[in-house]
Length: 111
Image 1 (cartoon, one colour):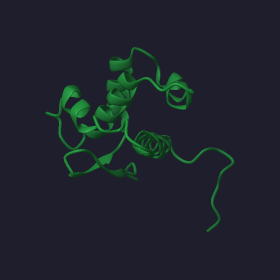
Image 2 (cartoon, one colour):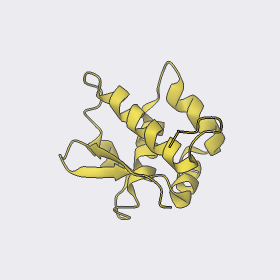
Image 3 (cartoon, helix red, strand yellow):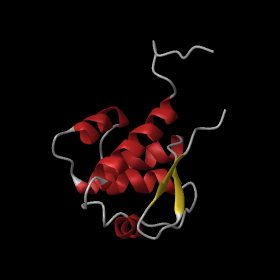
Image 4 (cartoon, helix red, strand yellow):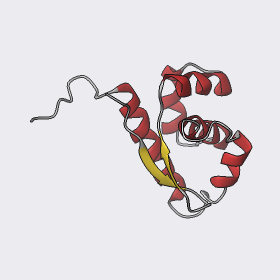
């Protein structure tokens, strides 16, 4: 079954899809210098650093455009400091990350 993608629209107005497949997760570990198991701490900390957010979004988008650079992603998310946009972006990232790892144990849906 393919990994679920989460739609997001960034500063250029283009609909994009965050997806964290195996290659994206490996790229993310390389870019952040931490194992994926530590990533949740970065996203749920009271103070969220911007470099990890940029790297996480980049890793989630390269499945659609392998030529997309991390600096270009920074330009696309440059307006996230306004209002609730950062919180919305982090929520989308978390949803896409959860989809990449499957449904948590003990959280089975009926049906």
